[in-house]
Image 1 (cartoon, protein in one colour):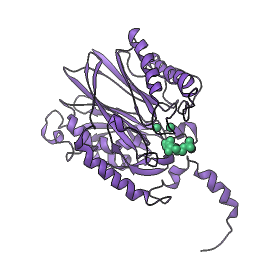
Image 2 (tube, rainbow, N blue to C red):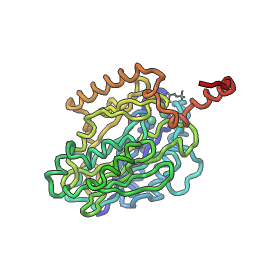
Image 3 (cartoon, protein in one colour):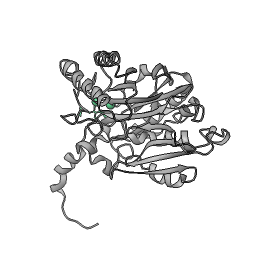
Image 4 (cartoon, protein in one colour):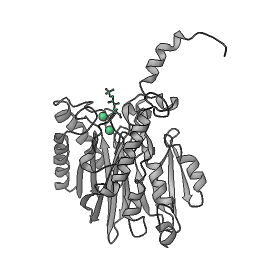
Length: 367
Ligand code: F6R
Ligand code: MG
Ligand code: MG
């Protein structure tokens, strides 16, 4: 049976500020998706939050980019905004719903989407990742490690079913075009692109030997859609695991190093990506630091057996303390780069309005 896994998320109001999602929003979304399950549109669902983002994980047989599934997600966000966020005056009610009219697909309308369709294997473990206070390029480094770095993923060297490597589809979020590059042959070209995570974003990964989908990430940049600052994108990622794909432990290992990502306070600062349990998926210090959760599921005929909250483990305590050390170190730079993002990325924040006021105060002068 071909099953589609769709993860669609939006920030439709924070509780309190931009820190987390109100339980009533989760309840509302659960009811909507339960109704869709009862009518047969969905096989299964799981609603959760990471920071201020409401996450709708859904399984069905309708394929990628299906208008009914996308409408269900859009209507859930719109109705929850009207019936919960606005009456409770949650912070930034409806924040990510950038367009008024739904026209068949939520892509380009504000919500982040990751979807994949595949023939369910004899056993089909998947891991769903969701991050808050960062951008889609935040997945570039961990995806590289999982699918291209033999120092992370032992299977690339010793498992014949992975030894051929993987194909990376890299999307240019500025010029809206993509390129496919193979690992290990094109590694240096791949790194030349994805080392610029604000522009080149890994969108999909395929197993090279048979073209099977291995991973899919969301790639929407909200500020590029809206042309102004609207909070960070807060991306999602789905990865298939085991038996010809990296093992669960190889996938999680890619997050054992809390790498620096763009986002955090006012979407304007670099900070470490901290792996956390669901119960700690709440952004606090300086509206962060940026956080990621990993939820494991065993699929059975499209049913989501889970979640297994995979970062809820002392094995990641060391990563978390390193993340806190890095957070403290980089915070001491205050308003200085490289803590604050560079001018190119600050273009879509509130900084240009401040700089504009200074423009006329400059006088001509030589060095
Ligand atoms: C980052 C984010 C927050 C806000 C900050 C200021 O993505 O959402 O860090 O940018 O709390 O929010 P406003 O401008 O709404 O007061
Ligand atoms: Mg928010
Ligand atoms: Mg958010």
